[in-house]
Image (cartoon, rainbow, N blue to C red):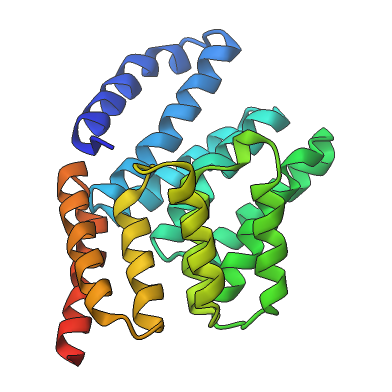
Length: 244
């Protein structure tokens, strides 16, 4: 979670790999370039550049489709493109990519990835005021949590917690966050997970705990160098203090 250094490195990799794409290099190098594009999109959002993040995510999705390789498309969509669009609040833009992900999963016979498509469908439904049945989010979470290890990324868990809060399920969101911190005291995305933990504490009337947790989220976001996470934590803290 040193995002400034990570972004600089990925930008350098993109430049180094550009020649491979233009010269028609080996297929594995083309796939590596697409993977780096996916990371570049996510890092641009984390560094507070949502417009650029969306542009790069769309470019990465196009390149992954053009590769004509189901596993590459699944990996790019499931492991970063849709996540980036979700974080940029481009929910409607993400929906077609979820359908493309699902089609690639079925076409490629990669059934183990179905829980990821279900995850994205459920969380976006919750974030767009569709008020899905709470059981839908619980079932989608169980599918990811009990699936293969590649599915169980902390970033995806944070999406579940945020969607559960939006859907009026603070107890479920709290359980998801406990699962993450029970597995690691320093998980990936710690600033965002702390912010969401504070939201569950506020929902339970524990405003003092929520304030302390939000201040911890702010410190963690600054350490990681993520203005996006820092702004979210600062926004929630301002609301809490304003209400008080």
